[in-house]
Length: 197
Image 1 (tube, one colour):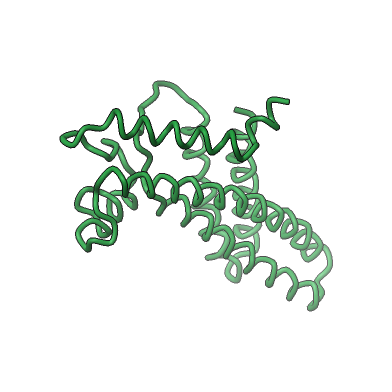
Image 2 (image 1 turned 135 degrees about the vertical axis):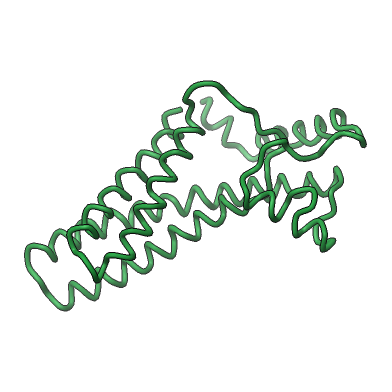
């Protein structure tokens, strides 16, 4: 019941309208429309002196920030969907890779390579959607470990593992194998911390 209420388009629309109404009421012209803390990619693109601001693509005003927050929501939703597809690709890769270690076949190797390339593409597309999305309105700092911090810590691990997996795919099978396992495990855990929040 609660899930169907929360996932209904009218409920989500009402929630986003409430958010934008509060932006209009709470933000005065002399206050910043940006959070104090942003990741470097957001600051580079969306910061007060970011690329989109100085080029005039996205001027910093209340109306534009409303559009940016809608864009952010869409980008992060797509990031989440791509995450599921990437995880499916990673699991498939693990299965194919395990079969290759036990019995080398040229056709299986080509399939493993193709699925690997598609999984890598989906992984870095999802990462880009997260890294380059507009910043939130407020970026609160919480003490202790929470799901957002855990997700970010795990992202650092699986990002490094994905890069390592790619670097060693033709150089060292053992490092390639263990970095791939690390990528899958930390990626799955990063998804789970949000799912069971």
